Amino acid sequence: MFDWLMWFTRMDNSKPLALVLFFGAFCGILIYVFADKRRAQRLESYKNIPFDDDEPGRPDAASAERHPQSRKVNGQ
Image (tube, rainbow, N blue to C red):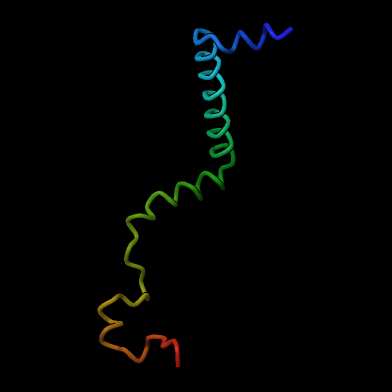
């Protein structure tokens, strides 16, 4: 009755099956991400986020030290 379950326990059968399942999931994710042009452009614009450390109009640490009154004081 559970002979089909024993088929999965053999490494000769389970490794190719896992490969096919994971490859199918990978292809599904790629289709989901790049099928819609707007989603693809939005995700493509996110690729430079790690390099965008300096934002215009955002005070850096040095200017916060020069202007201590601009810092929010807690506990008063």
